Image (tube, rainbow, N blue to C red):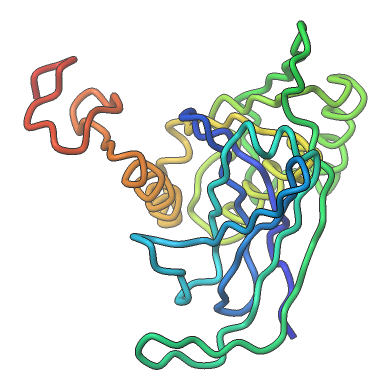
Length: 231
């Protein structure tokens, strides 16, 4: 039976869109539905116009202004039973509906901020409980939560990779408000760091951007030279 192994989180991509990120226990197709001004929208996890059907980790990109206006969204994932040419056969599905508190034109936007929490495999079993209290009580469930890197000590194990996504989910109120997450140098350490890099590259490719290998600034995909460092 299909189930969510990483609950949906909403991340700010920086180009007027949100990335709704989640994972299932089976290889699946996935999409997000929401309604704005009586119009129903369905947005798939796709690449080059083709629905992705070979992975269990999903990223669905939705316009920021639409999700802000919608106020809620539903994530749907369906197990891929078989693929044959242009057809995909699916079986069971799982859904999750969240309210969403995006930007509503308010004059003041409350930001929560934390960094360098350095979760590792020896962290206290109370870590996630204490982090939840930090977000909900100390920071008062902000409009936007900023995670400014080094959230985990490294990404050497699957446990640390899973913990990172759990922290992101907690930081965003279980997918009910957006998270601005920047990768620190500690997230570049370990075999699972390639999963973060893969996600970054997919997002950049959709924006026709790439990262300069010398100064790590975001530049145009087709640029022969970096306009910032000349590399």
